Length: 362
Image (cartoon, rainbow, N blue to C red; front, side, top):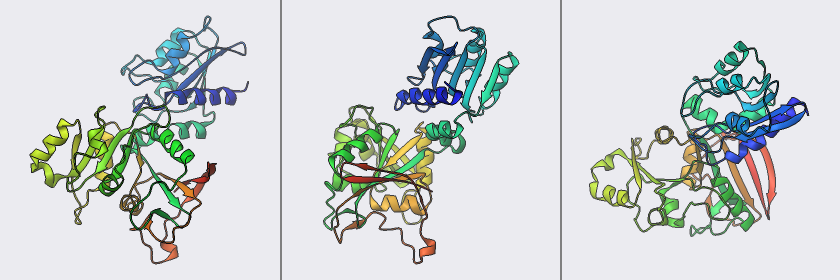
């Protein structure tokens, strides 16, 4: 197998850690000797052994003169675990092939330097684009101190996410809803506005597939949402977060009621219209070690993220239905000229059940 094939294998292995390693990156590792795979592993859980160590420990024979493949540069600093490069050097591994450098300043380039200094043959940049895509959440979190933001909406062919009575169950088909649950499990947090919380009363948990529950973030500028909502009463994992305006810090009784339900309350400055500043929300979520956010509504929230250019991509589920009237997906984003329209590129499309999923990027 060529180097590219082994790096592709590390990418597939790394995906096994989705939902368990954040805010760390997804990393997979394969070790070969005499054209045979003798060890493999991935980073399984935040704070536990890294992929390289798991691969080394799984080896069926001595690692001297072997080749180690890894999608991300091995660490060279002491964190929750010792540096991986020290173990690689100790095991007398002859060659290391790396998909892409780690942009974390604590690592970037230093792992490669340490390996080369020890006389190890190092190759960097194999399937680099694919390796960066795998860890797009981590890279943005490290480089911009902001979480990666995906807007997700299910709409009719004529762009409606609800009918004129605000009913939205169910626009998308069962297979599409199952796919959304699968996506939720990959993100650190799901975010909605107070209107969506009040009208739809969602749980925002992962139920239709196996996977961890994300944090559930609701923007409630005026701190008016009722405690009886599913987000609050079904909070046994203590992963519901309410983001509200700083002006509500004095509402001690309401805050105490929410905290007794295990809800975390974050206070953010409001803009001149009384709305919470979205970029400040994202910065605060980043401080909570949330590296990715899946925005699930509603129309005002979608429009605000678009207008403020605070999103990275859009997952648009198109259902073959026509309403003719109702609530538009981006009702508050209005351009008077075609030239002022938000311009996006189609990354990929796929048919899910009777719906079409369009993935859009800037």
